[in-house]
Length: 470
Image (cartoon, rainbow, N blue to C red; front, side, top):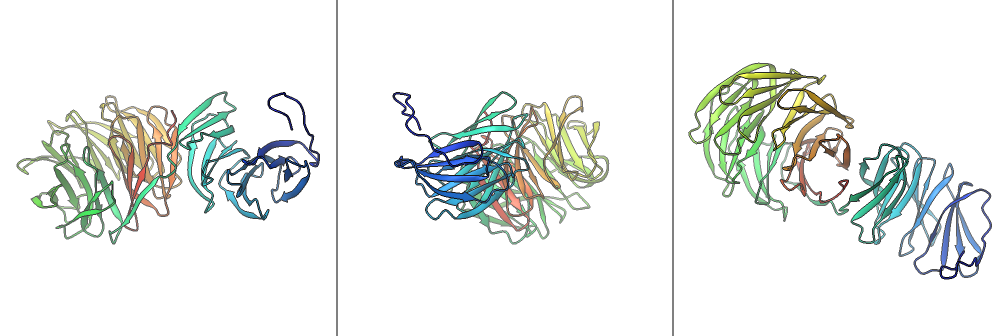
C-alpha cells in the first residue's frame, strides 16, 4: 500500500501463496480485495492491514477482480474461462458466469453496480446483468485476445485493450430492451420500420399485420384482410403506405396512418413470399414460386413477370435508384434483374443452402444476403462478385437489413440472436441474445432502433445507440 501524494510505501500485505494479479479498493476506502494465481481471492482491512477472509471456488488462476461501488458485489475472472459473482458481506458465491471459451483476463463494473463487462482471450467482450447472471451481449472487433477493459463513469462507453496492440472505444447503451410486445398469436414473418415517423409494421402467421408506435410500444392498428399467412411487408418512402404479401396469394395496399385497406393486387398463382416497394412509390415487386412480378403502384397493373429461378423466391429488394431488382431463392442463388426491361442480368452463386433474405445498400454498391447455410454474404452489385462471407450465427439466418448509411448490417437467426456487423470489414460488432428463434428483423433509418420478430409472435424492440465500435 502506497501513499499517493508522497509515493511512500505504507504497508505490505502477505498471505497469498502465489503471484497476485489484481487488486480492488472499496469506495469507502476500508477494504482491499486481491486476486491471485493461487486460485483465491482475499479480503483485507485497509485500516488494520489484516487479512479478513479468503474466497475459493475458481478452478484455475484468478486474473482480475472488481468491487461494486456500493460494496455489495465482488466479481472475479479466471483462466477457467468463467467469472464468479460473490456477495461481499456474506462471502458467498452467488453465481458463475459461463460463456467465454478461453481465459477471462479482465472485468469492469458499471457505476450503478448493475452490469459487468469481461474481456477474454477468446477475442470477445461480454456484457452481463449482475442481478440475473445473464449474458446480455457479445462484442467483437480486435484481431487478437482482449487483455483489459474499463468502463467510463457514465456507463456509456467501454475501452478495451488487446494483444493486437490496439485500444478500441465502444459506445454502449446498456438499457437495450425498449419493449417486448406479444399481440400476434403466431410467429412474425416480416417487419418494417418507417423512415420518418416512429412506426413499425409486423406481418404474421396469424393472418394479420399490426402497426406499432416504437416510442411507446403501443399497438395502433390491426390490419385484417388476408385469409392466409401474411408473409412480407414493405413501407413507402413517404411513410404513407403499407404493401403486404400473403400466401392467399395476393398483395394488398394499406394506408399506414389509418390502417385502411386501399387495393388488392391479384396475379400470382402460388403463395407470395416477399414484397418490395421502390423509393419513389412507382413500382412494387413481389416474389413467388420460381417467379417475380413487377407492378405499377398507382394503377395496380402487372407490368412484367420475371422468370429464371428454379425454386421458391423468398426475398426481393429494389435498388434506391430504381434500376435493379435483386431476388433470393430456395435454389441457393441470387439474381439481379433490370427493372425497366425485366431481363435477368446476372446470377450470384456461393451459398450452400436456401437464400432466405436480401437487402441492398442505399448507395447502390452492395448486396447482402442471408442463408440457411448459417452465413451472410456481401456482394458487389455492379459485378456480382462475392466480397466476403460473414460467419458467426450457429443456425439458419432468416433475415437481413441494412442501416440507411450503409455501414451496418443487421441479421436475425434461428439461433435466437440478432447480430450487428460492419459492412465494410465484415466484423461482428455486437450480438443480442433473444429467448426464441428469430424470423425477421429491421433497422430504423438512423440505426438507433432495431425490431425483430420471433416464432412466438413477440415483437422485440431494441435500442442500439451503442455497442458499435468507434
